[in-house]
Length: 362
Ligand code: GDD
Ligand code: MG
Image 1 (cartoon, helix red, strand yellow):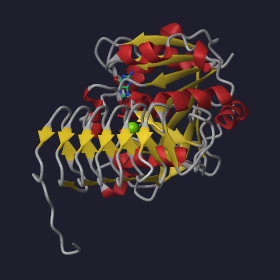
Image 2 (cartoon, protein in one colour):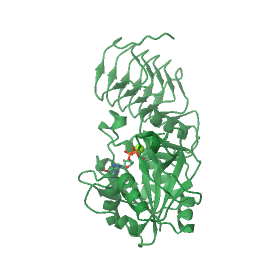
Image 3 (spheres, helix red, strand yellow):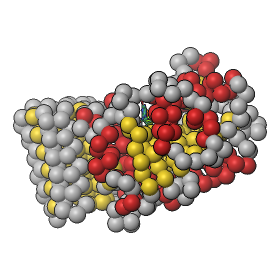
Image 4 (cartoon, protein in one colour):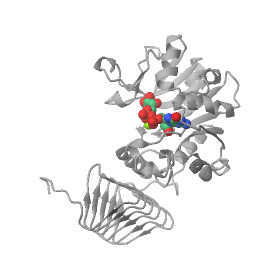
């Protein structure tokens, strides 16, 4: 038996308004909730039992995944009354673990898409007789993440969560959001209060000279926390750049159109776009590199590029979206133009020809 804890309790504020109704890990990425991709990858690596550590809108997870039998793993749930932070959530979830004190337990951030060799991380933990093995990746700008410098032997020397001072930018290696913990170290986290594993647990363990190792894996890695990263992750799964056993239909391609969706023969759906169940893409519309949730409608001649269209939203004819986010149930009239970073709140209504941008290029 190999157990894992999946941290899915965050509020996903950077993805509002999509996360108003749905927790971030349950938003559809390449046709299924992101958590389904993570469960499938964990299962493929030999994980048999997963504790879903929930807080915000916990029922959305249990309604969809149940006991996990349809997904080939045993799923149990631990829900915090109020969010306990990453470390507090891990400690809270420990009540459901069955592993022995010295056994390895995997922990995953619930919003990271990666090609990590999960079994390889467990092997590295075992080989080094480590207390914790951390999956690390290199990024050009590490400031939005946890910086994790290591020495020549791979031992972690510091943990600097989202540093603000220039002198703290000591490495391009970041915490990639997956750990192997020796079970007993989870039980040692103080129970019943807010704990950040990044700001409290890791620095404390390093100060106590615990054996933390970092494993830099150069595989695909993406934190889906922002709209731009969210569409990128979805199209990379649809197109096969990052394989997922949970991709509906199983075969990557130019686009993914879920059953029940209706795409006009005169529309173009490309660039790894995903079209949700019962969505409609009308004639002469273009959907490129985007995610269209269930039941949304893309009107005649509309153009949706690198954007997210929420469930049941309506995009009017000849409206142009590029880098935009439209909340669930929003209705956008004809001939609008919503560009980089534009967000329309769930349920909002925008009349015809209401928003236009002009730029030097147009
Ligand atoms: N159950 C529960 N309770 N889960 C939580 C809580 C909580 O109170 N707070 C956060 N989480 C979950 C989130 O749902 C997410 O899956 C994960 O913990 C990490 O939280 P984020 O809010 O996404 O953190 P981040 O992206 O800013 O930073 C983290 O991830 C980076 C890699 O993507 C840190 O671990 C960084 O060190 C790391 O580099
Ligand atoms: Mg994150």
